[in-house]
Length: 307
Image 1 (cartoon, helix red, strand yellow):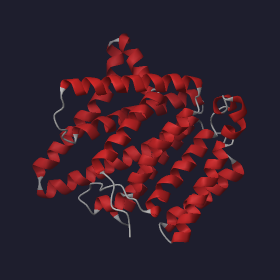
Image 2: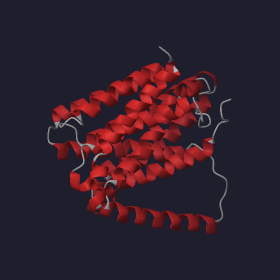
Image 3: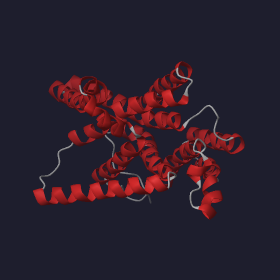
Image 4: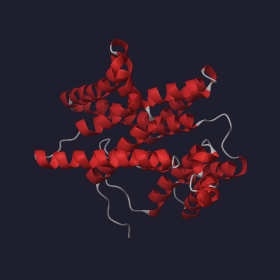
């Protein structure tokens, strides 16, 4: 098995065991969802902070920083207002986050051959299908967990929006068939085609809640990335031990802040409960994830179009 294959297998096994264990230990969906949001937020906010700390940014003027901060605050406010009126927007935000995870997963082979670092975004049709297929399937699963009132708040648009999970499942299956027709990523193509067809026929399993889908999709990316960084640290330790230790220190510092705020601080100060609730909620995390996707895409750039 290739290093990328071991990464995927280990991540899928760990996340699968966690989600299954949570389902058995906490059959109540509300309690299970609270646990999922806590786990994802603890690792996820560390991931988002680490992506900033692991890269050196050019100096910025105070005025520019202030303008960017105000723009982001206004964008967040608008996003929360729109989300309150049309909760279905959460599916779009989740789709962006999942596409980022799927694109990273598809580029793992390249990363392991490039010093454990991702290269530019690919423009190839195969890479786009590999990112779009899993994204559509996750949206189909998540959409099937939302109540009809949340899916169709626009009245006449309700039936179309309510059909979004089925349409997304069909799109995921189509992406898998397209990969098979192109002779690329055949295992992924078979998985997408089969899962998409099953979702079209059976719909989202009734035992699943939105938090289960959100946790599984988010944690697979987060765990896979931690495994990639662990492999990078081990590789550096053989030739550049100082660099390896620096990487581990930065990772530890990035993940210490979420642990402090989400697990330890509320025990000592009840006033931190409001901040904790805000950081645990998927809407804010998905908004930050959107910024993370844009930031990392800008850093990586886009590769040349295939001939």
